[in-house]
Length: 160
Image (cartoon, rainbow, N blue to C red; front, side, top):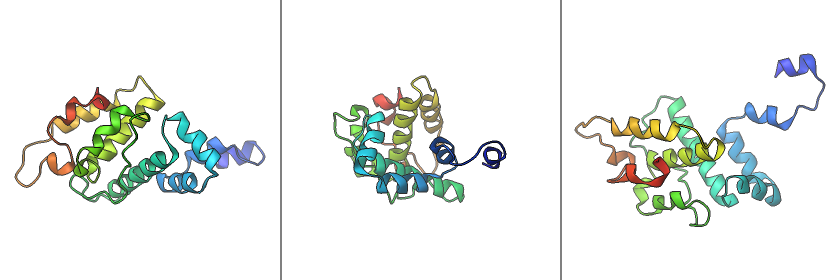
């Protein structure tokens, strides 16, 4: 940001400020934003505002666990992603089939997959994430199921 102030005068464009925010700040901003603004932002992702806010909070929680090198694969997600209505994100409705898909890392991974595809339809992130979880080794007391990756998860449309 210092580069901005060396070259330009305030106010700083919002897009520059947003790039410096973490997910926690973003979720707080979305939650506190005027309802019309929240709706306009959520509409870009084909979501209702409450769904988007819950998804960003979920990603913020996962980011914080990861950033502090804590255990993620079988940790309960405190800020669970809201199950979208079928008209919002039909590929994501399946996270409502079993609570473990929302209260473990699977729900946040599916949310990240959805948002990545909305932002960049040509991204390979979903395929790479799917391959990573499919390569998860069989270990006693540690399984993909404990991460919310239930039988058939890899066949869900969000991963293709």
